Amino acid sequence: MPALSGTTALPLLGHASHDDLLDVCHRAAHTAQSKQQPVLASWATRLRHTDPIALWAHGRTRIDRSLLWRSAWDRGSLVALGTAHDLTERGKDRIPATRASWERLIRDAVTGGQQDEALPTGQGPLLVGGFSFAATATSAGASPTAALPEALMWVPSLQIRGSAGLAPMAELRLNAVIHPGDDPEQTAKTLIHLAEECLPERFAPRPESSSTLAGRLSSQVRDLPSAEQWRGLVTQAVDHIRAGTFEKVVLAREVRVSADRPFDLPAALDRLSRTYSDATLFAVEHDGHTFFGATPEYLVRLSSGTVRALGLAGTAPRGSTPALDAELEQQLAGSTKIRHEHDIVVRMLVDALRPMSGQVNTGTGPSVLKLANVQHLATFVEGHDVRRGLGILHFVERLHPTPALGGHPRKESLSWLKHNEGLERGWYAGTVGWSDALGQGEFAVAIRCALVRENTASLYAGCGIVADSNPQDEYEETVAKLRPMRQALGLE
Image (tube, rainbow, N blue to C red; front, side, top):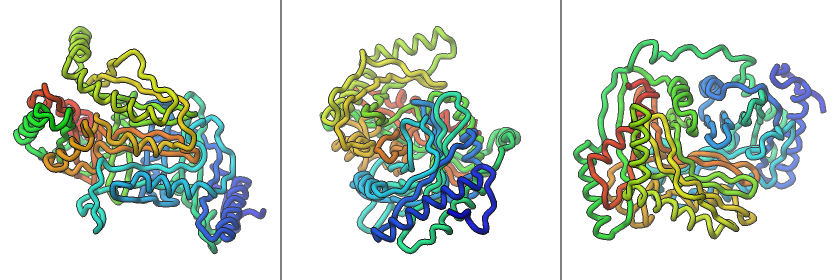
């Protein structure tokens, strides 16, 4: 097939790759015309591995939507730039509706190029994005104050996957949806132009962040609700638990910040990456808003017929000395109140995975997960021999929200939150991640996070409330959980 007319060789790809890309676009156009439906075209090549934060920081200035992901499970990275196809949904059925749309789109996908065989999970075109904590849309549409849609999943125009280990290569994949009658040459040209814009031949070292150079940001801070009101809500929740309304509820609060200049988001993500290297790093940018964080908790991971979930509930601070840290760890592991809170989460995960798997294991009991500022009780739950035909979005639908995010029983605790919390969580305590063409993928719980637009930010934290909860202790726990995002944004 002849090379694309009117184009120059992109150094990262080369003329031969152009021809291969054009061939994929022609085959997709033929399929779209014969079936009279949109067809996904996806082409891949090897690319020298680049720091994902630097790549995201450069690419996000060229496009209107992006995702950054660095997995805590296998250290793999993903940068998604632009939108080839949008699967935005709303309402209580937003997750199954998204799954059905993805399955229809991927069924007739036309692929080509040099796929990276080092990526056992995440091969082919990906569906990326996330879901809000709760469905708040009405028949009239989405919430008028929501910054992000209740379900925002999309196929990126450019996706760059970096595998775990020391391999210096990554996979670059260009995606486009071709409709009947579309010009395949124009589609290929558009993808090449986007790659030229978003993928420079080399990156200069990122300079020290402006917030570091200029000192700490000046800001105005507002607690929503106020500290006194929030402690009162904890008391109300405890009263309901003791009365038998529900067993546990997760109560959140927001800290709203207005700074004297725009936040340096690449610098914030770099700080999170360095300080919380064992967390899953994520950022979703849409319509001028950036939702990002470094979460210690994943909701679910599906790979090679095995599903993994993490029960993470129960928190204690880190000690200033090794002896104090060990003492706090012992208090955490030995607390009857915290162990009860944790067991509720694990029990729900086991019950949810058992009908979908041949065998479910939880190990010998909770371990202590130590982060830079806090430590948690953690139990890994694994389901083996996952039932045929089930994909990652089936598990997201079944698990979200877990008792670690909303409460238990789910219906009663979520109903109480809806009428009493007084907070529009949006994507806080929602879930962010991706699915591949085979239904494998990863989704993390969106905690230790913030929603930013220019010089304003909303920071979120929550606590699991049970019968023995103390309002002041719970408030201090939220203060500790807010610290990573305050430090990342240059607020302390």
